[in-house]
Each structure stands twice: as C-alpha cells, then as structure tokens.
Image (cartoon, rainbow, N blue to C red; front, side, top):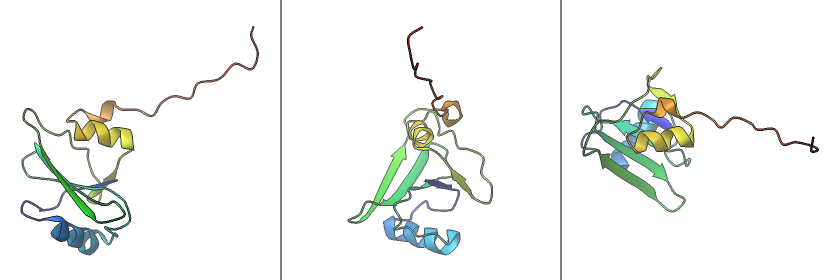
Length: 108
C-alpha cells in the first residue's frame, strides 16, 4: 500500500491510475492499493486493481480527520493493520505488529 499526497480532487479511476504511473513510476495494475489525500484532511481516495478491473473508493469522514502519516519522497508504506486504522479514521501510529508469543514445549 502506498500513500500519496498528490492533487486528485476531481480525478476518477483512469486519472488516478495515470497519476500513479506518471508521477510515481509505479504500476497501478500491480494490486498495490494507492491512497490519495485531499487538501481537506477528512477525505481520501483509494485506487487498486482487483484482478478484473480498476477500483476507486472515496471516503469522507463525517466527524474528524484522517491521521495522515509523515511521508518521505511523497510515499509511505503501511501494513494492512495500519491501513485499516487509517481508513477508519483512527490514529494509525497506535497500531503495532503483534508480538511473537512463545509456545511452551512442555508443562512445567
């Protein structure tokens, strides 16, 4: 998943796919989810290839704003758990990878 801060306010699926290819040098048909933030921090758009076509998802939060991560070179990678938190409007920084638990070998 890649997060992008690029102008997209009126772009549809084809326009965002072209932006991914031209500006990022990436393949919009790779299955990666590309997330675009609007100037207003309560709106995002997602574009991704699902195997049969390009999908465009737009979301506007009714209350609050998306907690957008700091980005370097215009791109940030998130885990699926962090993306889920971002999409729900939660603070993605509070999501951590599960810690590894040790399974006991014998009772004792």
